[in-house]
Length: 107
Image 1 (cartoon, one colour):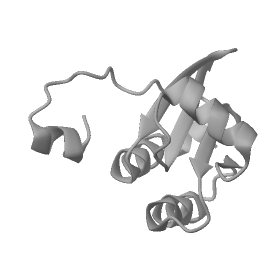
Image 2: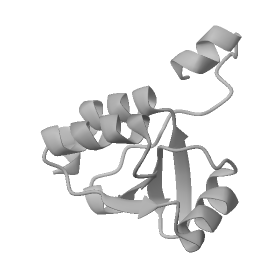
Image 3: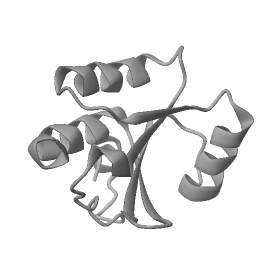
Image 4: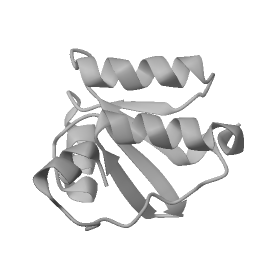
């Protein structure tokens, strides 16, 4: 549950993000002008991870984000659980917490 959900009073509506064993199973949907995206990218650099970035200014990436995650909000971390099966993690604080918690397993 994100801090935003907690403040709204949401009770565990979303299942926890799945743990993966490779940074190649992750993709960050972002925009260049987004300060929250910059915050996430700073942590990715700090942790020395190589995560694919998908700029939602490009129509194909925006369509994939909308079709898969259901929102156009960025940043969003796409986590590939199994081939063709994805979990979409929104909220920069949640993404950063996920990356910090699983950084060792991702290397």
